[in-house]
Length: 116
Image (cartoon, rainbow, N blue to C red):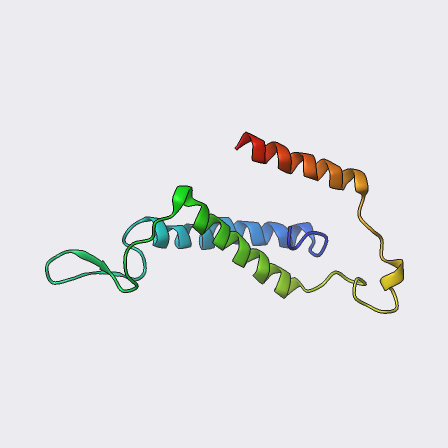
């Protein structure tokens, strides 16, 4: 959503494939495996973490939203603002969104929230 209307389909697919096949699996392994990037085994053979106790992630929501939010922020920063949106010469002529599609998207979100 952060890159909507700013990228071509091939750029969005590339971002999605990179995110779901490389970045997300590595980050969730670090968080959910119990033997992540900051863990080591001490002299007694016990697994310890450099940063303290292991991560407790309720239903996986913390890592999922962290990776998605950071990915969206990085994508939006790399792609930049929409063309013509913040240009003083063309700002008055910028086309608004489709109200029926906004309502439809809202219904999809409500359905997903209630279903979950």
